Image 1 (cartoon, rainbow, N blue to C red):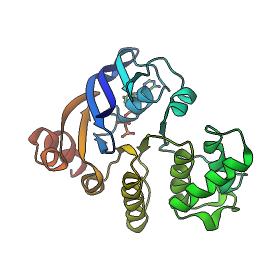
Image 2: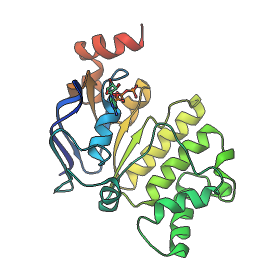
Image 3: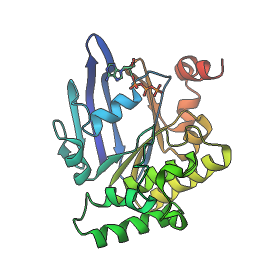
Image 4: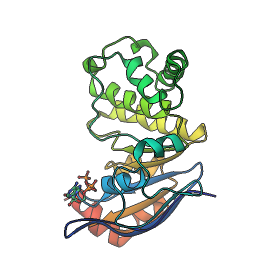
Amino acid sequence: MAMLEISHVSKFFGGLAANSDVSFSVEAGSIMGLIGPNGAGKTTLFNCITGYYPPSRGEVVFDGRRMNGLQPDRVCKLGMVRTWQKVRPLAKLSVVDNVMVGALARTSSLRKAREMAMEQLKVVRMEHRAAFPAGGLPIGERKKLEVARALATGPKLLLLDEVMGGLNPAESEEIIQLILDIKARGLTQMVIEHDMKAIMRISDRIVVLTSGEKLTEGTPQEVVNNQDVIDAYLGESHA
Ligand SMILES: Nc1ncnc2c1ncn2[C@@H]1O[C@H](COP(=O)(O)OP(=O)(O)OP(=O)(O)O)[C@@H](O)[C@H]1O
């Protein structure tokens, strides 16, 4: 069953088509990788899916429900949440308080929100950091905090925007394991990532965007052997 169906989505900024007639679906419980060169429209598509931008054309259907026109907080309550490439935790608040902000999308009880936040800090292996001020965390832990905050909203579909960006190999490996753990818990995920080796390892399928359009879609093996992808994407990143 498709958890997410994107049909003919376009997003225009003035004369620029940041997304142009993009269609694909994401199966429940799977990981869909989203790749493409800088400026290909990946982040814009995440924004169209999660309500930060209304698509100019096309339709986003999540869990059988049309999402066009819904605001991000409503989308989040319905079970779809994204992380941000540039992580900006509430610096003066503790780590657990930051995660509670996510949990408060599900409950108005502070006690319950704290419990839910601690649960997600365990998932990202940061419970020992609960009382630490979020502003003092190194980048690797900021990224995990961002994932914990998103998980605390209780999503069915989690969209991760370059969660490995700026991390060292050991930190990236930890995130890969975390994404696979999240999959094992039954969540559906969409992942934007520039690291091809990582995206190949975690994705069930991959969509490739270039200049706002879908270039191709397939299994990691199909995508990596596709000559158009090699020319448009791998060619650039290995130049
Ligand atoms: N709010 C906006 N207003 C105008 N143009 C925008 C806006 N957001 C994105 N764009 C443009 O849309 C195009 C797609 O940008 P987008 O950030 O979605 O690409 P991306 O694939 O996520 O890139 P990157 O890999 O560098 O993060 C770019 O040309 C960008 O300059």
